[in-house]
Image (tube, helix red, strand yellow):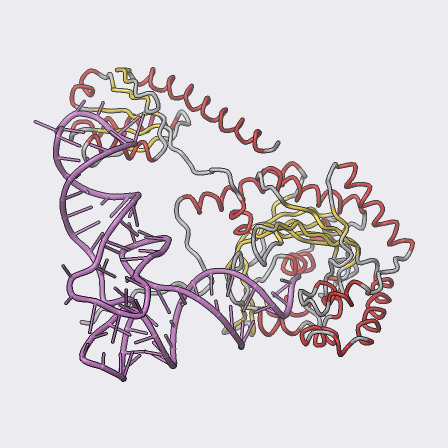
Length: 430
RNA sequence: GCGACCGUAGCUCAGCUGGUUAGAGCACCGGUUUGUGGUACCGGGGGUCGCGGGUUCAAGUCCCGUCGGUCGCCCCA
C-alpha cells in the first residue's frame, strides 16, 4: 500500500498552539471585559449568509464581490458566502429578527471571518475579528462612546504606538457634492495620474486621495476638501468635543475615506507603523445608509471592527498561562492519592496538573516549564503519613505538609503572583 | 489577478565562485546525580536538501518547470 501524503492546511488558514494561542485568547478576554464596561450586549450571527446580504451592501465595487468574497453554491440555498465581516449579517438580523424593538442597540461579537485574498502580513483568508456596533442612534455621543470603547481596549491590551486618525464624510448631500468636485479635479489631470488611479477615477474616485503612487500625490494634495453642511459641521464638532472630554487624542486626516455610499459622518482608524502594509488595527465609522441598502427603513448606525491576529501580534506583554500546582506521584500507590489531591486543589480554585510519568528529575523540570508555583511529591511514605513533600520551586525550599497546609500555602502563593503580574500590567501603561 | 524573495533536522538557520561521510543553535532522549528542576559537562536519535526534469565526470549549490511559504501591489466591506 502506498502511503498518501498528509493533508495540507487551506491557504491562509492557521493553527495555533501554546503561546500564540494564548495571545489570541488574551485579546478576546480583554475585549469581553471592556465590552461590559460600556454596556454592549452580546450578539451571535451566522458564519454564512445568502450572498446577497454582502453583495447588496457592497454597491458598485465589483472587485470586492467578484474577487474577495468566499462564495459557493449550496444545495438548497443558492449562492451563499462566508461572512467577510460582521456588520452586514448583524444588519440582516436586525431586520429579520425584529430587533428594531431594542433600539438603540449596542452589541458586540467576535469570531472568524473569511476573505478570498492573497495572504500577507496580518492578512489571512480565515481571520478573526472583534466587532462593536450601535444600531438606531444618530447621536454623536454614541460615536464618542464607541470610539472610547476601542481606545480603552487598545490601552488595556498595552499596545503602544497606535494613533487614532479621524475624519468626517459629511451627510449625504455634502458627500455627493464633494465626490463630484473630486471627479472634476482629478479628471482635469487624468493623463498625469497613475494607471491605477485612472481606473479608480471610474470606480472609486475617493481612493485616489490615499494612493501610494508618488505620481498621484501632488493632485491628492491639491484636491478640494469637503464643504460640510452646517448640520454635518455641528455633528463633527460634537464628536470632537466628546473625544476631548473623554481624553482621547486623535489626528485629523482629511484623506481618510470610505468608498461606499452608505457611510456618513464619522470615519476613523487606529493605525500602527509596526505591521508593514497592514497597519490598520481597529477601524470603523458611521453607516447611516446601510440598512436602507439592505431594503430596510432608515436606521442610523455606527460601528468598528478589529483584527484579532493583528492585535495579538502587537502584544509585547507575556500572557502565557501558568499552572499553580504540579503533583508528582511516585509509584502505583501514589496515583490515587494524586488524583484525590488534585481534586481538592481544583475545588479550591487552584489549578493543578498531575505529572505521572518519567523520572522525578524530569517531572520537576516539566513542572517548572509549566510555570508551577510548587511541586507536590507523593511517594509510598507520603501516602501512609499523609504528609506530602511540598517544594516551592522558585526558592527550592521543601517541607512535609498535609493537604490543609498545602492548600493554605498555595492560596497565598497564587494570590501573591496574581497581584504582582497585575502590577506589572499597570506599569506597562505609563 | 500582478511582482519580488525564499523552500536544507521538530523549530531557527549556515553550507563561499558546483567537489567526495550535509553542519550549528534550540528542542527532544540518555548519562554525570536509581526520589528532586532551572546552571554546567559528556553522549544519542533524528535529513527523500519541497517535488519533477535538465546541464555536468560530479548538483543542497547552476538552468527550466511545478508545488508551497513570505513580503509587497491591486483591493480593503
